[in-house]
Amino acid sequence: MAAEIIDGKAFAAGLRSRVAAGVAAMKEAHGLTPGLAVVLVGEDPASQVYVRNKGRQTVECGMLSFEHRLSAEASEAEILDTVARLNADPQVHGILVQLPLPAHVDAEKVINSIDPAKDVDGFHISNAGLLATGQKAMVPCTPLGCLMMLRDRLGSLSGLHAVVIGRSNIVGKPMAALLLRESCTVTVVHSRSRDIEALCRQADILVAAVGRPRMVTADWVKPGATVIDVGINRIDAGEGKTRLVGDVDFDSVAPVAGAITPVPGGVGPMTIACLLANTLTACARANGLPEPEGLAA
Ligand code: NDP
Image (cartoon, rainbow, N blue to C red; front, side, top):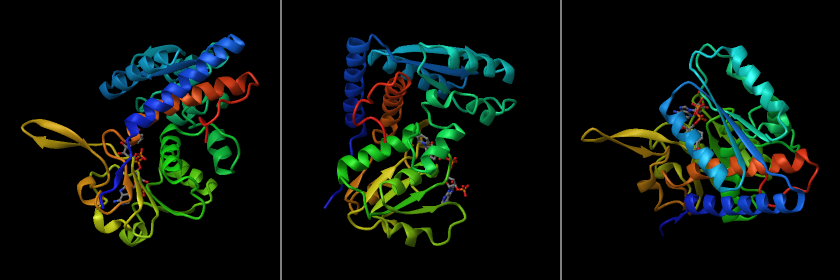
């Protein structure tokens, strides 16, 4: 039987409407408008598209959107100064510094200069530590989106075996921490792991966050498993064209899996939606208000 296709686009649209309703309620009851500031350094085309989409979706949800564009030559001190001003700005509840930063800038230093309460990307060392120790944190958007889709499909994840391929700080590690918090048995595999296929075949939940086009094939997947494909890879489609594929070979895996996210249209759309959810959550926490339900991890 063919897998259920998890429609991330529709899921993200639903999440954005819930965020918009939460923003409207916050304005009505407390006269507060959540605000998200994005800092973009340089002219990387992909980052520019991403930042533009974020700005548009932020406004569509009824939030304030602030954009700070700095040249590729901006000094580290200038970027730190921009972040410091945003930290102090009461209209700003969420701050996102678009990565990658130019090579002359210490990205970790910049990220760790963000007020952890406004760190809606969840990359600050304090938030990583809070998540790792099972405390209330700002959770990185991509794994948060994956978790929401998994909960929606599976309900309780307790006792399930989850295998996460990839151990990056922005996807693999926080994904593993979240799944552990859900009482999954978690295995993390990476480029040095042995016999990855056999480990993956044990998974009830398989999350691929690698950056290798169509690496996961049908023989890596247990029949009926839920497969979440985080990968975004641009490949040559012939005739001078390119197309996006995931880390999972969708065509071979879909007939085996119980459910699967497509690329595009799976995890990708959830990432910005979760950023908006995190901004609303950050605004509620900053003002000592109850958090809107179902938006945080
Ligand atoms: P990184 O490059 O930071 O991490 C990749 C991970 O994959 C590393 O842990 C690496 O292992 C592991 N890896 C590499 N090759 C292999 C292999 N052959 N077998 C097993 N593991 C391997 O990538 P990110 O985590 O940032 O991103 C992963 C993918 O997700 C990318 O395609 C990226 O574009 C996409 N992405 C999508 C997002 C979305 O919104 N949908 C958001 C963020 C990322 P090691 O640590 O040993 O090097």
